[in-house]
Amino acid sequence: MRYIVIGAGAVGGAIGGRLHQSGRDVVLVARGAHAAALRAGGLRLTTPEGRVTLPVPVAESPEEVAPREGDVLILSVKTQDTQAALATWAEAAGDLPLFTAQNGVANEPMALRHFRRVHGVCVWLPSQFLEAGAVVAPCGPLTGILHLGRYPEGSVEGPVEGDETLRRVSEDLQDSHFGAPVVPDVMRWKYAKLLSNLGNALEALCGPVEGEARTSLFHRARDEGVAALNAAGIPFTSSEEQAAAREGRMTYHDIPGAERGSSTWQSLRRGRSVEADWLNGEVVLLGRRFGVPTPVNEALQRHATAAAHAGRPPGSLAPEELGV
Ligand SMILES: NC(=O)C1=CN([C@@H]2O[C@H](COP(=O)(O)OP(=O)(O)OC[C@H]3O[C@@H](n4cnc5c(N)ncnc54)[C@H](OP(=O)(O)O)[C@@H]3O)[C@@H](O)[C@H]2O)C=CC1
Ligand SMILES: CC(C)(CO)C(=O)C(=O)O
Image 1 (tube, rainbow, N blue to C red):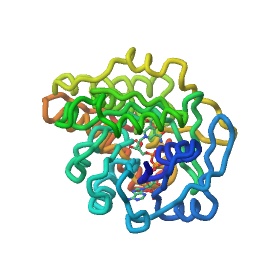
Image 2: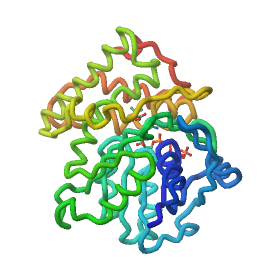
Image 3: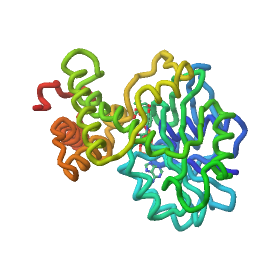
Image 4: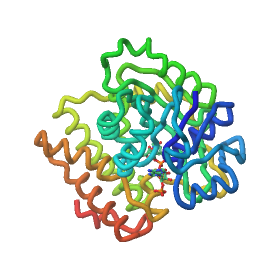
């Protein structure tokens, strides 16, 4: 089995790097200065165990990878880049299985337009990509926990337990410093994760979610998300269920010299576009469809997107300036 990791940034670099370290066949697909740095000097992966340089093969296009029978695609671009990546890879990938190692809940239906065999991944994997060629994955003993499941759930190919691809990918990940439970309801996990990611834009705009003003804004954004999911009849795992899955298995370690911030914070820090339309924007969409007011998520979506367009760095807004 060869893993083609499309979008080898924070999450893709950590997953691809760990799989490579455990002897799996991996190709990292990257672009721009990051691709050049990976080719020139390998992937510099920092974990609580230290920093290693991994000579993982790198590619920039399907032609260079030449996908073949037995390959598995892992999609780990931000959601705003999903459609373009799917369109680039679908033809060359044929009937190969695709795993969506991404936040939000919009990637799986997008992927299903192009790929028959789609597997959702709920990604608990704090990781940083701030410098070309370098990824930091600060958690241990597990680097991350990746719940895996078929999309759509209960699809035509029989019970999830009999899915050979899921079983093998789960085994490979578990040999590579990840928890990787196969679940029959991966979207239930992903909707719960979406609720926690409603704080990403807030942290990127206003700084860490601490202190009265920012904590209260996060709770309001989350409450709107819960109300929208309930109104839409969408199930999500409870905080207790999620905490039990992670219990003592993933502790955040301070890595000297490494900055800390969510994936959206990192996007602003690197001057890139943000994922807010697909995180806060998912709640806004559901709110509009099911009659639930979502003013805090609307403000976070709007301000985060504007900050990215204007090239503003993280932390440029006071909580009061959100106007909610
Ligand atoms: N970072 C984290 O801690 C976590 C992130 N996630 C989720 O994981 C997903 C990925 O996030 P993250 O790893 O942070 O994102 P990153 O921005 O770190 O990595 C994505 C990489 O994909 C590259 N890319 C985009 N499109 C293409 C393409 N068509 N071909 C090749 N490369 C491409 C980007 O390039 P460029 O830089 O040029 O745009 C970037 O290098 C998101 O959904 C995020 O929310 C989930 C849990 C934790
Ligand atoms: C909340 C966090 C850091 C956890 O992995 C994340 O999902 C992100 O940065 O997008």
